Structure formats: C-alpha cells, structure tokens
Image (cartoon, rainbow, N blue to C red; front, top):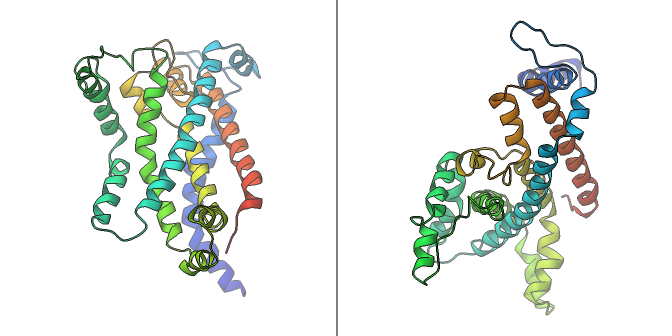
Length: 290
C-alpha cells in the first residue's frame, strides 16, 4: 500500500472518527472527570472531592437496590429474548403460506416507538379496565395491579421488553440462517441424524457469531432501559422497578445532582465494558467464523 492509499483510507474514516470522538469518547472522559468533583450549586462552583462520590455510592442503598433489579432484569430478559428470537427465526425460515405476514407480525413491535409500546402495555396492565383484567374477569378472577405491586412491577416491565426486543433479534438470526448452506443439514439427515441433532450439531454452532452479537446488544439494552420505566412505573413502587439508567436520569435531571449522576454513569460504563469483554472471552472459542 502506497502513501496515497494510506491517506485515502484515513480520509474515509475521518468523519466517523470525528463524530465518534465528539459524541462518545469526549463525553465519557468528561463524565469520569466530573465524578471527582461536587455538583455546582448556583454561584458555588464545583469542588474537587476525590473519591467522595464513589464512597457515597457504596453507602447508597438505592444504588444497590437498582443494581439487584438490573441483575434480575438482565437475567430475565436476555435469555428469553434470544431464545424467542431464535424460535421465531426458525419458524419463518422455510416457505409457507402467509410467511411474509408472520414475519411482519414478529417484527412490528421493533419499529414501534418505545413510548408507544409502553402506552400500549399500560392499557393492558390498567387495573379493572385493562385487557388483562378483562380477560381474567371472564374466569371470575379478581382485579390485578401488576405495575403497582412491588412483587410484580419489575416482571411486568420485563414482559414488555421481551415483546419489544425479540422481533429485533429475530432479524439477525433469520439473516444468519439464510447464509447456512442447506446441503449441510441435508447430508446429516441422509446419514440418519434427527432434526434436533442437526440443529445442535450444525445449525446452532454456525449461528454463534450472531448469538455473540445479539447477546452483547441484549446486555447493553438491559442496562439502557429507561423509556418503559418512565411511562409504566416511574421506578416504583419503592424503587421496585427502577434500573440503573433510570436512577442516573433521576439523580442527574430530577434531583440535579450531576456529580453523583456522573459517578453512577462511570460505574455503568465500567460494568458494560467488563460484561462485553467477558462475553468475548467466553464465546470467542465457541464461535465459528467463516
């Protein structure tokens, strides 16, 4: 490669690098820097406080509560969303009457705005008048308040998230399934391999690059959920459905404690980085790249 090609290549990626630096790296560096200062109040400037914000974080019971909530939220939504997406992709891979309509039905929740999805499910969950209570009322069951109970609020939000994300992940699995040579499965079936064996020994291993990509996105999505919570529960009752990003939003923009919000953001970024690296280390040996 001569100098001209080298310069041409860097000029091509320069716009993306500029936007990435301005809107990703610089804000991240500024957030880390601000976490070591106090929040400015009126004419009182911010002061350097060192690790005081991090000590406050360790002593904050609400922080630990939302972290536990986020853990359960991730464990409940990530495997279920990925499994459901794979099942849907497998079900619409082969040709059948109405396949395009079924694909569209699976993907429709993905194109709906997050606020619209939350309002749709808010109608489902409304005590007494919602669709769920209307259906259960036919069987003589009493009213339910899924969003107003500390025991069920988080699970209600999890159901909305799975419904929203499964169709999105399905598209990636469907594209990956169409790249798998059909003669591999046909050869295995000729040798007498049952359908389950063909899937676990051939199809699923070849889908591991897609599974790695989807799982990383699912982890990120589980920590950036704020829209559904804002509309459905507001983090309540008693922070039972509050997640880390929603707590950051409340701290920074409702209570205007920007320094502590920056500290919470640093923790979230570090946690996502560790999880992403861990996923690469765990799945990379199982991924079959072409």
